[in-house]
Length: 394
Ligand SMILES: Cc1ncc(COP(=O)(O)O)c(C=O)c1O
Image (cartoon, rainbow, N blue to C red; front, side, top):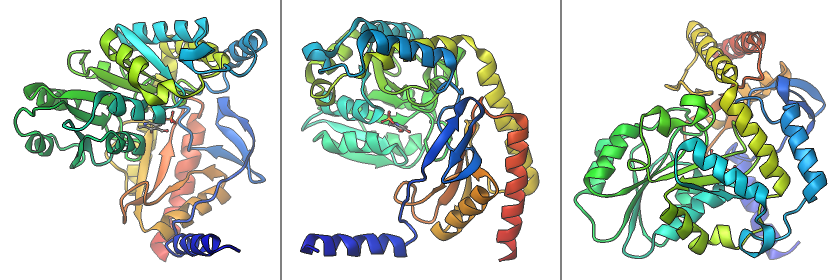
């Protein structure tokens, strides 16, 4: 064992002692259209994916993927600017732009990379970036890596943001926020955020990873649902691996914004393009997401049924109307034990612990999908009642 290994082992032991050690469950098979999976030798109903509309295994999406893979092969072979940009990618970018009502959209291989790209391409020394304290790690990392002055404001608190914004700033100011917060499920106060930014000519960027496909007309997302457009939110980012059920992400905005990203965003320029078959599958999924309103209706019904049932049980719901419905627990060990009990009862609900969430706020993160049935929701509530009763008796 090297000296490095000894040091690393001590670090891993510290994580174990703090109940923060993470392990991966192995999914052996999956019927995503019913949210059922076989995991670590146990059949369960998954309440933990971001496949909100149940599209990841839709036969039409799978067929589009397979057909395109037959035509294009698997890998794109190069970055977009070298030779990896196919007509399939290009058509998807046009369709995404049209869908969200913006002049252009640009595909990224992941949402993480899209978020690194924006701050990196738009900001530098002399600029500043202000972020909601609970933003996704990729938005935070993008801001930190940009070289701009970095600050956070209290979660969802536009007055706190205004205090930090002060008056007009010499350089550029970017304000970045999740549209729907990934671990809390609540929505950003978009209209007031937009007003605060407009007053000091700050640029507002919204990461709508969890709103895109779910809220707004046809699933156009949180920005559209709030009645805002390009002038209010010049930078719109969303992912394709969640409600759309495929993989990748995009940024949508003006021609100048997108062209700047093409020319300057390092995580766009220096990486292999998405496989064209993923782009083809995404085009199909986008059409389904836009037209099959029943998926969003079913999702809303599940959330309402769950919240009514959880309230009746006295569970610690958080203020969320999105498909992300966390139950506050507190200590890491208690969250882990509740998650384990649910798994033994056939319900896969992960415990989310620090550093993903602030210390003392460990929780069960329950996510709903149109792939669930009403009886799945009722079954989860029954299992939660048992787990909560057990906890109360401790
Ligand atoms: C709010 C938010 N932004 C960005 C990402 C990153 O997206 P991707 O998984 O495509 O890298 C995620 C989750 O993965 C997210 O929840």
